[in-house]
Length: 298
Image (cartoon, one colour):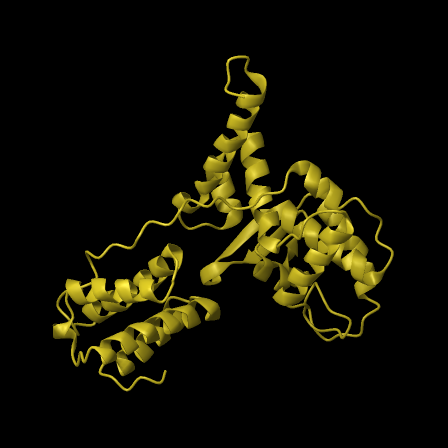
């Protein structure tokens, strides 16, 4: 961080805390660092030299400054969350007596529902016979992500030793270094077995399940590019990996209605995070109603 202001050392300590004590991911820690750097720059520009000078008006002014830089409501919510976490850390360590950010609220963001594939779209995506080592690997990746609702980072981090009970279950290392056990569908198991046969043809010294042609662990970016290419080849619009996770959750909810189980499978720490899929489910029901009911508004 370039700022040479009073909060610099405390911000560094906070980043160490969230990384090493709270076990947050490197991406999340870097996100906090970027947000707090903007806050430090703002405080520097208005000549704030100690925490006691920061009040709710200054906090609101910072929110306004973020608006003036064309940050969207969702981005501003994240900035405010970073600031609130930092000031809670300061209070816990007796560096301040109260947080000026405590009562500051962020703007509400529009309720953008995640993009979801229909079961027919998933069928179309996977409706091909892989003819190369790479295509066999790509099919296994998609089957695993859709079968178990994995994040793309969780997928690339799978090791061969993570499978249990003859591949009926997979041990997944999720956000915050939390481990969960997810079931594997038969199509996913079959695709993985086909890939493992091909994987033996690649010289490697890693236990990673998904490899590139050089024998090293596949990257998130590679999966993103391969999935996009795969979708276009199958006559679908570009697909990003998280759409498979959203589709898994939505299709599970439509079939079972069991939100708690879906929460466990997705590795969500809070049920409120999973509840976005109930909105998708209601949206699905509304479409059926509008299409089917004789008194519905067509």
